[in-house]
Each structure stands twice: as C-alpha cells, then as structure tokens.
Image 1: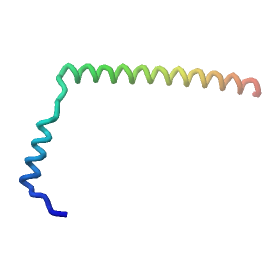
Image 2 (image 1 turned 180 degrees about the vertical axis):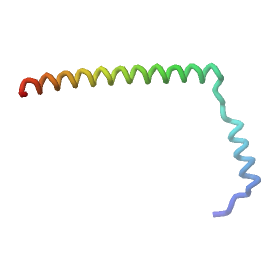
Image 3 (image 1 turned 90 degrees about the horizontal axis):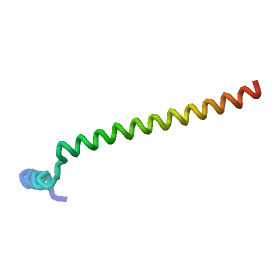
Image 4 (image 1 turned 120 degrees about the vertical axis):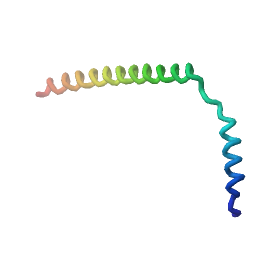
Length: 65
C-alpha cells in the first residue's frame, strides 16, 4: 500500500468539507427544541409507567403481607 501524499490528502479533505451542507440557524433551533420536547415526553412516559408498576406491585405485595 503506497503512502498518500500529504498535500493531495489535504486537498481531498478540503474538497469533501466543501460538499458539506451546514444547517441554518433556524434548523438548528427547531431540531434542538424538538429534542427537548421529545426528551420531556419520554421522561413523562417513563415516570407514568414507573408509577403504574410501583402501584401495582405495592397492591400485590399488600395482599400477601
């Protein structure tokens, strides 16, 4: 395997970076807000599931104890 030319490598990297489509400020803001909303919904869902399971388990254990 031949060792790559460092100058050619840097040129190829710059060419690839030029192809990157960077998000706009609005897109970043919207996706950030959506992540926080989805995290809050997920946390709420799991808190409710935990509450239901805990209540059910306490109910079952109270029958035998």
